[in-house]
Image 1 (cartoon, one colour):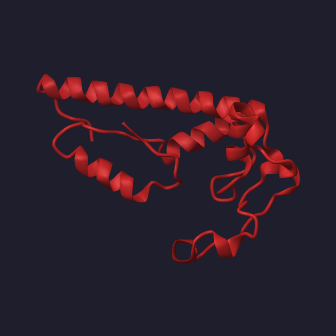
Image 2 (cartoon, rainbow, N blue to C red; image 1 turned 180 degrees about the horizontal axis):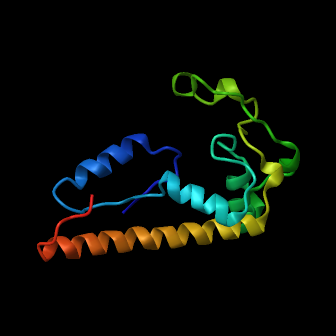
Amino acid sequence: MIVNGHGGNYVLSNLAQEANVDGPAVSLFPLGADWDRARDDGGLVSDRHADMHAGEIETSILLHAAPELVGEGYADADHDGGDRSHLLVHGVGPYTRTGVIGFPSHATADKGKAVLESLRQSFDQHLTALGEQAEAGSRGLPRQK
């Protein structure tokens, strides 16, 4: 299992797919669908695009897991960052003065707890999929695509 919380996981998703060509060997976690489910399960009001860095989801997780790491003033730190058309070229800097691209004002510890529980359940599903795939392959059954 490869666990990487970086948004997108573009390169790692290609590596995971390649590693599974001859049979199930690795799963990458969390995927976009895992994050979307966690956002829904946590009752977040922002979406993944609007809430990119230090926003509602990350601040909620920290308010639950390590509230001492959340600075005062987070409730007044919302910043949408615009369309960010050239993010991959220029990085985050041109789109925010503070590092925030998102809406930390919507964050709560309860949302963070629900998000982490949802991610835990999704992680279990990834492990199960790897196990089911491995068992099917060892019995000569066709792999799921």
